[in-house]
Image 1 (cartoon, helix red, strand yellow):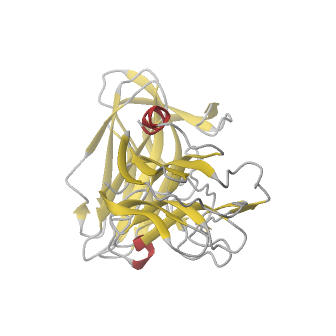
Image 2 (tube, one colour):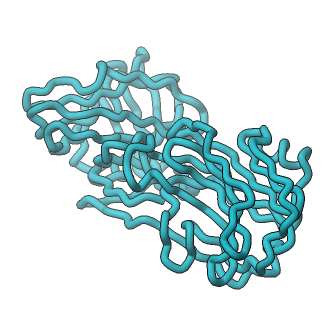
Length: 325
């Protein structure tokens, strides 16, 4: 999980006076939100309803605005980002979202003009229906992006002030009984927020290790490519694959199988690379880490994880095809 700061105040409290409303009535904490608690607000809106919050932005800076929205009795809703200090409407114009019966996170990435300053964020700018309808909103976020970050980070709650979150890393030790040493499989469904232009995106790894990091198995990203590799005890590489281009922001399914004479790397349902090296790992894998080395946290993972699984057997080709599809 990456470092980020949510600049959007009252991210779960659209009944707050900071949100300016016209023909919008808010029922606070009326709907179960994506976090499983009843803390999302339901808005009753008319055909020309408007609601916005004003946030001051830096000039010529890239931001992403995101929030969760759920259909009530209307099927679509308009959004807008408008600068009041001379830049006008950001991006290509008004946004219009088709709503579903479940929660959907919508996001808009834009770069401010030469003025910046006071900017209105409209989650509702004309409901697009006649009469009166309802829509639920929750989890507003506005974050400044580095030049190589192209997707919003996971949600950070705010109240009266901006809130920052430090990067998350992990080292899970004492799991040698779960990880296979002679053979095994590492799998992850992962998304990377970078396009490969910065140092932080060049190496981006999840792995299993032995206690001194002399033996390791990794999946992840190297530059703009997906990668999987194995290092045997003693430092030689059994398998090293870094030629599979991936789309930043999209989730991919990666797996690597290790077993003497039968090493392979899989991505999105296909076997990408194999090795018949007859040497086993030759070390007890006893930890799961979010970096190249668990000791120094070198080349830390920087992205999103839906699933991370470790198997103490080398899965078959059929199993890996199913797992990564």
